[in-house]
Amino acid sequence: METPQLPSPEEKSERTWAMLCHLSALLGFLGIPLANIAGPLVIWLIKKDQMPLVDVNGKEALNFQISLTIYAIVGALLTFVLVGFLVLAAVFVGGLVCVIIASVKVNNGESYSYPFTIRLVK
Image 1 (spheres, rainbow, N blue to C red):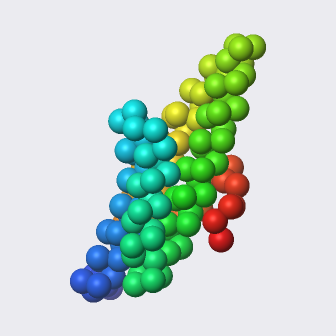
Image 2: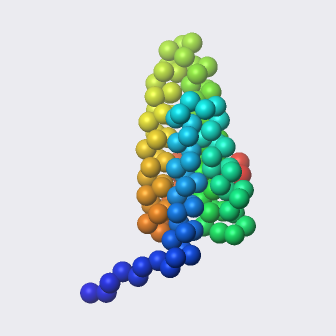
Image 3: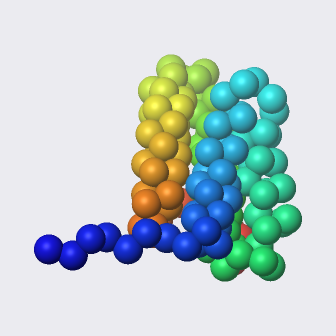
């Protein structure tokens, strides 16, 4: 039975920054407008040229958060016909769950692709 290979300090640092790209989106839950997009955007812009893993995960996190924002706006508009409350609940819960899953997977060295994401940042 082989022992698992531990990541190098550089790889661990890169995984941590990639994880922070995803987790920084949770700033939006603090009630700060568009913080869910600004958090991943700032980390991605600072680290994307130094760390390829951050470049990939930063784009993934950004695309997902932009998509969630669009879905939340549509849900808010649909509240006038009462269906929007269900859409907003799904966006809230789905966004939270997906961000946590992505963060854990990336920190473990696995890749993660968010579902229902509009790929705007390439």
